[in-house]
Image (cartoon, rainbow, N blue to C red; front, side):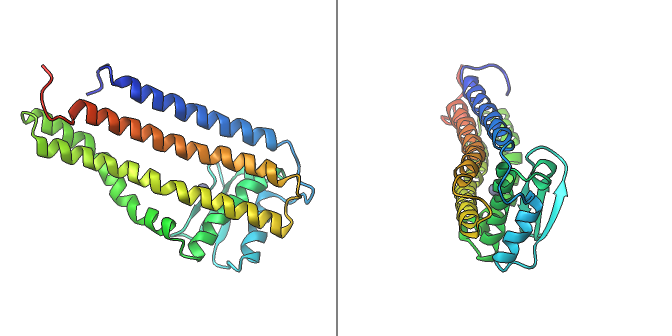
Length: 230
Ligand SMILES: [Zn+2]
């Protein structure tokens, strides 16, 4: 299945775009990690302060290892900040911490795309795991169109998950920037810097969705007509 057919360039384009996006977010974070906020609070303190100010009292804040591994877990009610975010007083760190708080606020307010995303996770995981086996078995069974189409449909669930992720991410950043400027954690000059960091982070989700779309397009081009190309 992984031979170099002409459609393989779609996968390569997707990989290049994803790599470019992740290097862009790292560079942007590093750039604004050098700007120390006037308030001089750490990412962890900013997160705790924001959660309190938003009347969210059931969410814990912890530090985790890794690079840009910051995340919010709605099931565990746990906000995890990477070391670079947790201990830094930079504009970038406070921006990322506030973004994760944005997810906690979405959760507290039952923001629909967040709930939908959580509901799609198991289906999308199953879909992306089952897609290639279904297609392979379909091809082996003399191009069984039912199995091949089922495989392509299963893969499209992974794309659906990534598309639903987009409003969740952009909305969390929007909430974060409003909270940061209204709450005075960042100054008027600092908010646009945090916006750049969060925009770069959001682009990685756009890149991931686009890469998955290209992979789906490849599957459709290769197998969509359900006929042997000989
Ligand atoms: Zn996020």
